[in-house]
Length: 163
Image (tube, rainbow, N blue to C red; front, side, top):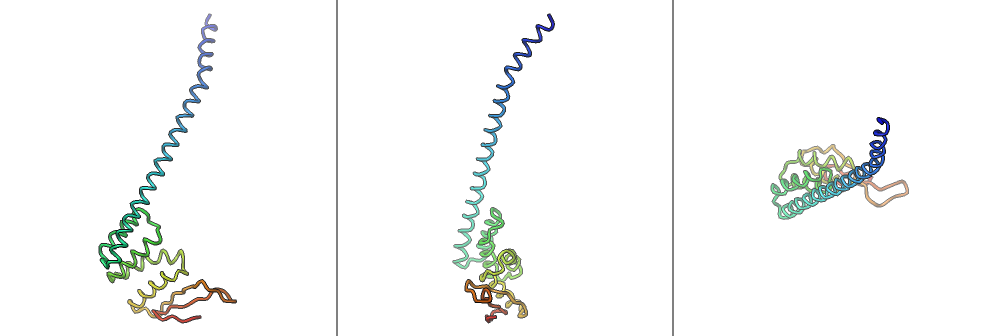
């Protein structure tokens, strides 16, 4: 009799196990989709806030309110720390405040990523000129190519010469 009592319990469990497994799998899929959706919403909100602060900073930079622009660009960089445009405009606002050491620090990142960027090189050359570092040279690559390769300009503290 003991063996016959175990059989119905085991059959009941084995018949319910696939149902429980299916329910737990469905719960895991729904949870994954919920977390994925929330993550997308979070990143979209971060980008939106960064764009909002950047827009305010750009307006203040255009109005030559450099102190406000610096604060707003820094706020934008909190939401998007690797944004190239935010870093460039922050550096420009810092140059407007004559805080060239800070501007230089913000320009080095974009320069390391794109050393051929003319705007970054020009701003770095202006900082070098303000500091009196006339020995420092920055290479500006233009889109025009020559038979020997891309045409370059060397900017020696504000003077441009083809090389």
